[in-house]
Image 1 (tube, each protein chain N blue to C red):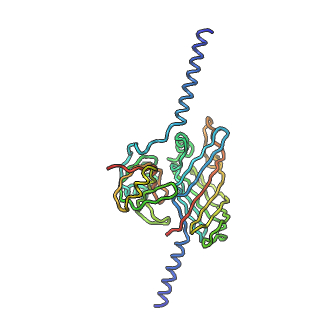
Image 2 (cartoon, chains in turn cyan, blue; image 1 turned 180 degrees about the vertical axis):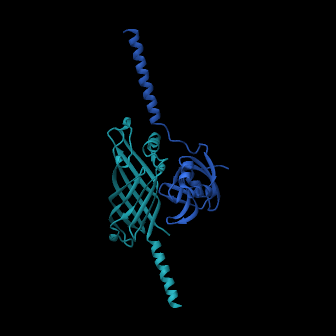
Image 3 (cartoon, rainbow over the protein chains, first blue to last red; image 1 turned 90 degrees about the horizontal axis):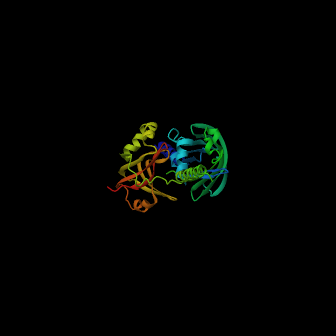
Length: 183
Length: 145
């Protein structure tokens, strides 16, 4: 009987530990920025869902494209209807890992370099990516930050000739997520 | 100056002016006012969530990019940075609570924070899609009953 109780207690502890290793947000922030000779365009999405399992390093996020907000309504329309075709491809996703998660200690406040690699899917095209970023542990939360560039041509995003000088061929993506422990 | 040259000059000037004005107004056209727009669909929060979990693609074709009025019992109000979000919970999964998340327009944030959980509310907003756990409505307002 004692053994059985011990086994049950051990299993419960493992289950609780496993649960406590996941950090999530549903209000992460992604910015994209295009700097072309004629125009600077930026858009913000503050409803990014992201999750990090600090035991395995598994990291993923999903972004609804219609949640991107632009200053100009016309740009938002073109982004959704012509460039990203968000009716056909409603979201962008990343599924991968923080490959150096073993260097990371959630029990200790601090700033850690992070290397994230995995599959980034935009506009229905999936590509393997590897980017540098940072993870900061502070007061039980993890702030993940990264800045990287993507080429529109890598994701078959076509810009019409008439506005080709208004939009950069390389878009800067800034990721900023504050992950809370999943209770 | 010959008359036809004058007429041609005026026509060219007028067409340049009209083109500029059309471009200017199109370029600077305002964002839609989702608060005053009529809802494309009126549905319960639970049914909207069920539609997406049953068939994400079909529900997306129907609801994404549309203005939707929803009714349901409010589970909680979350505040994150500049966002105030009314949450309707119908499930629990790998990302915690799952259901409907309605991001409120700034002028409704104060009102919804005072609404106690389990109160029946009617909201209207722009559906941006389903992120595999939650249906997202943006630019939401309270619909007076």
